[in-house]
Length: 406
Image (spheres, rainbow, N blue to C red):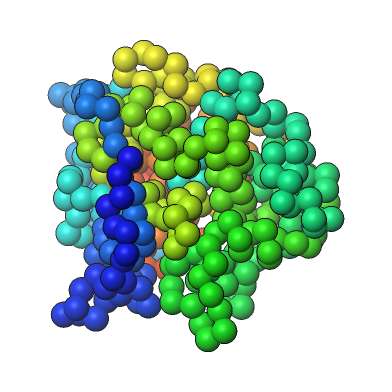
């Protein structure tokens, strides 16, 4: 691990006036998401020099010419290239079937050597390391969160919240991540963590301090409703630092990144205080993202056949569970994935077919179909953070590709 950016200048392009205040405007996303080290203090997460090759299949799929149902103009067909460019706003895509790459492509200006921020897919990577810590006996998911982080005990809202509740975003803490509501908790948190300039009277106090000071009241009883809350992933990062007594960037590097044999270093953006933003600021190449994601399709093993994450973390994740399906729909119903579940910082979009995904705003994902031994990894610049049409478009891509491997 080494520091890449100590003091960011908050400017991506002087000529185009792109910087901290407007990096995520729709017209700027293509460059903004490849340039986060200019906006944040950044550390490099490095490999150990042993690169794991990605096996390439001789039977590539002609994805660009494949026909898909148009998720926008219902009843019409579009090509894969149109779906990727005009519906998903994809920047890079890799498809792996039975351990071999059957498709790899780049668009919208991105190249194979660019590091793209994967936003909330970072949450899933964090949970994979929580699973390792549980396997090592350092954590117990049934224990109360305040067992590990006593600073939250000052708030009655955290009493009764287990580590598993936090992993499943069922902590019951009052919080809103409605990206269309500028008064939502998320925007105040994002400015405190350094995503955007603070407003008058605000201070960039960092992700840890913001969570401790502001996640202080209860909205639901723990375990009764899924409420998406990015700050809970930062809380998980704090738990990892507590039990390992190391910087979170070093933990990511040693537990997860080095074992998969990456081609190049990843970048981890931190808040102004130096805490890696666990909920969404990991940046890496498409192929190295695929190496990390492949742990979930390879029963927790890397390409040297070493067990990196416990296999039961994956098998437990995809089990259909009536309680998880109920809590998933309890707060804000999901019409795209009516049988969906959220568990351990993963979206289990179709548990009966063993389909689940890491998911990040603007179209980042690593999608898995265990029954087909199929993995699809994508990076995107969708114009808004999320929405029903984005999810329908992604699901159209996933299911359309899956049908090629019956």
